[in-house]
Image 1 (cartoon, rainbow, N blue to C red):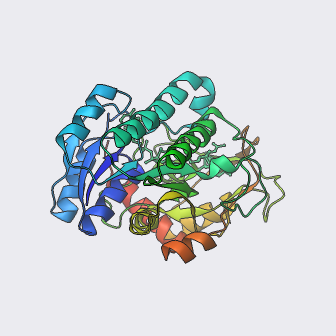
Image 2 (cartoon, helix red, strand yellow):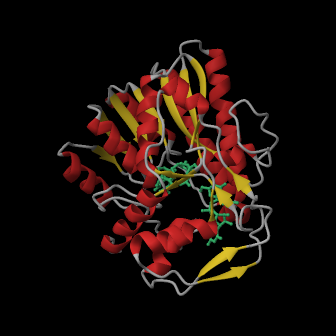
Length: 331
Ligand code: NAD
Ligand code: UD1
């Protein structure tokens, strides 16, 4: 298939482009490079020995998007493009609503116009808000805790309504848990343009000496050791989950948790990182981060059963691969 990948130069998009090319698909990437670099696409070409068509454009620009649909035969759309910093979304809600919701609207409209019926959307476990763990796909979405989370809830709702109105439209809403790690080549990985917000890129940058100390946000949660518990999924497994979602796309709405089903605490992750890589990660305990929940992990039985997909890599692979990428990566 020929697949349009928005945000394909970014962290999850780049690993998914790699997986799609390896599975024999062709990819067209749309990315405005606001949080990525075009060199990432060159690295994927090097790894796969395959071509990628790239357009450096903004997915909120309707006429540019339309011209891509007009000029290429597209079989499926994978929509990764989006702003993803939770804390920034609280400070700049309009930017987040505009970028993340308008991009979804424009792509859904183009799909309708050009009769493209396969759509895979990057959603997030954040849509579960303060539900009870493990999170199940059919839980009621009470309300996300931040503007970023709301953009995912709204985008899910838009795509669900499009599917209700058009019985041929197939959409997969993939709710990612905590994507971490990097491709084993060390060539592609998480390389945010700014200061990282998430735990793993923070750990790797502290280990490399780019930052002095990791701040651990709270050690008084009702968890195994007081620190927050998350479901860390290797980005390579996550990318393969997208290929499985495409292969098993049914008409209507398909919702899947992409996680491992296992929780790991911050202390456990830091310790594993130090042991696996034989490096020291200095840290200090600080206050809880506002909006954080104690525990977040998936029930993964639906994806396992219906997609015949399961995360294979564990915390050791995650720590080793994230560190290999960080060591090789030069800004
Ligand atoms: P990322 O920032 O690495 O990648 C997003 C890409 O989209 C970047 O290359 C950026 O330049 C591009 N982009 C953003 N807005 C754009 C626009 N208007 N037009 C064109 N390109 C645009 O982020 P990621 O971690 O790869 O996340 C991919 C998707 O998955 C996002 O939608 C994110 O919200 C979602 N998600 C991520 C996580 C996570 O922890 N990384 C968790 C759950 C969901
Ligand atoms: C965050 C978002 C979530 C989003 C996800 C992926 C919040 C509240 N949630 O998830 O909506 O889908 O990113 O982008 O921001 N931690 C530290 N020190 C740090 C960073 C994190 O102790 O410097 C802790 C956190 O308190 C948490 C765990 O590490 O317990 C994981 O944090 P993080 O990587 O930011 O992801 P989430 O908070 O799970």
